[in-house]
Length: 351
Ligand code: CP
Image 1 (cartoon, rainbow, N blue to C red):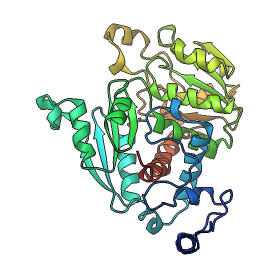
Image 2: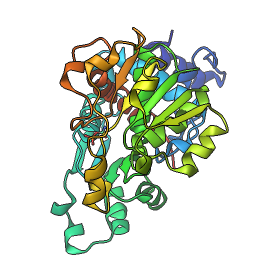
Image 3: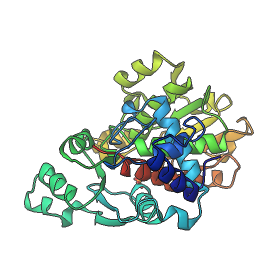
Image 4: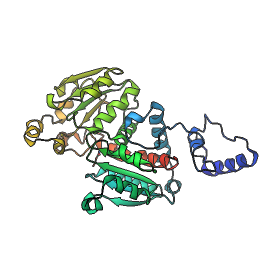
C-alpha cells in the first residue's frame, strides 16, 4: 500500500537531514516517483517520457505506470486530489472539435487543483489572423505549465512537443494517434475484462483513419493480444501499422463482423469518419457498413464487452446500450482518472 502523504513528507524531511534514503523503492515506487529534488526534477522514475505524443513512445513499463497511478488517484479523496497540481496552469488547445477528450481533460485538471486556460475553437484565436502554429505554441508555453492539444493534422503534437519547453499531451492529431484515449481504453479493459495479457479484441469500422484504433492496436502488442481487423476493403488497417503488429501478435483480417463475435473478449466499434474522407462519394459507399445490434450478440461470450471511443453515429444500435456487454459510457468515465494521472506525472517532469 502506498504511504500517506504526511508520512512521506516526514520521511523526506528525515532524508534531507540524515542524507539516508528512507523509502523502500520497490514497495513505494510510485510515491518515490513523486519525490522532488532541490532542482524540482525527478529523482527516480519508471516513466521515461516528457510528453505524451504517440503510443509508440511508451514502453510496457510506462503504460503500466500510468494505469497504476490512475488507479491510485481514483481512490484518493477530493481534497487529496486537489493538491496534486495546485498552482499549475493547464492550457487546453482544441483546433478540432471534441466532447470527451476536452471536457474530461478539463474536468481532470480542475479535480487535481489546476487552473485552465485555452480554446475549444481555433477560429477565435490569432490563428484566424494568420499566426503560425509554431508561434501559437511558443506563446502558450509562456502562460501554462502543461499543454493539452488536439489538431486535425498528423504530426502536429510531435511538432508542438519539439517547440515547447513544457510537456505536451496529444488529444488526437488527425488520423495519426490518440495516446491518452488508448491509456483510458486499457484502463477500462483492465477494469471490466480483468486482463490485458492475451486479450482477444476485434476492431470494427474505420481502421484506416481511426487514430484510436492505431494507438490501441499498437499498445496491445505489449500484451500479446490476438487482434481481429473487421472493416470494408477501402478502410483496412494501414499496412505500415498492421505489418509491425503482425510481428508480435496474431492478426486476422475480414469484412465479416458476425464471424468473430463469438471469439472476442472485446469488440471495439468505431465510427466511419466522414471528416477524414477526401471524397464524399467514397464515404457514402461505406458509411453504414456495420451496425451492431443486440440480436448479433447472442453467440458472444457472456463476459464479452463492447467498447467505442465515441461519438457514435449509428454503428451501435441503442438496443445494445442496456446489455451487460456495453461499457462505452463507463469507458468515457475512465478518461478522468487516466488524464488526472497523466497531468500529475507530467507536471513533475522536467523537459
Ligand atoms: N473519444 C474521443 O476522442 O471523443 P471526442 O472526439 O469527443 O473527444
